[in-house]
Image (cartoon, rainbow, N blue to C red; front, side, top):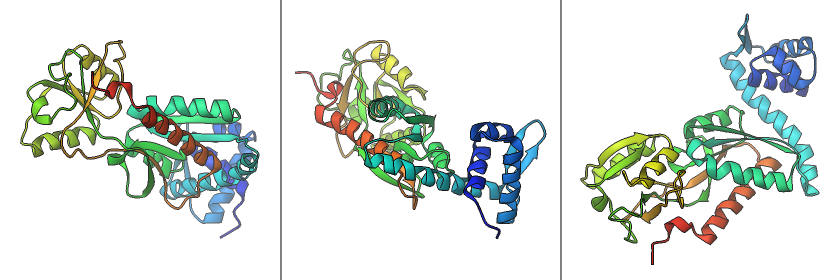
Length: 310
């Protein structure tokens, strides 16, 4: 194998992300010829074709190119993190951090991270990718993101995880619902009433399995992938639902109450997922600190919506 250079890996990581020689050159502030030459040299060094040039449609990575791209991103990030680590020793951080977020967790992840870095490390650029839990982890493993925030049930076996907040699903009800005055409710008590289910997997499958295990058939009114839509329906007292994150009111401003479920309800904790075997950068470490602080504060204060009425 010929000698690899950091410059080749940097340019190839840009090619993989932009799928364009032109955009990669613009991002790296060099000529297209320099990027094309680096790609050719990298292919010669590894002894494989890494990218297919498609006229008018940019660049497509080969299978070998996808493997090299993931490693190239990691190397480039780790080298860049040397500077961040030095700055971090003086209480300053800079650079770019991309966080993958399961879409229903985005309202609980994006604002606190932006707040934390804006107030403490304004030189850090934050990017967020919102998608399904498995998808954000796969993008992270491919090197597109450095960190993912998911639910426990979504964790992939080739990711390392740590708990940010222990969580269990709760019943969300309108204060006008007949069961809203109870401190806790059971699936048996809820089953006769109309329910609106979260259609995202694995949430839907897990919910239906829990009803079936209890010998119950839920009275399903409808399903939605939108937590906001579900909360609005519940706020109008058209259905109850089973959700993870408490809220005081629906997006329309109608009050809500969350009640713990009786019985042995499995945890489905909020987790941070990271690539196995990849050293944590200073930026990732700082993001984890911010997220632990955020959910630790919530746990200490207690979600107002979860408190049963006096």
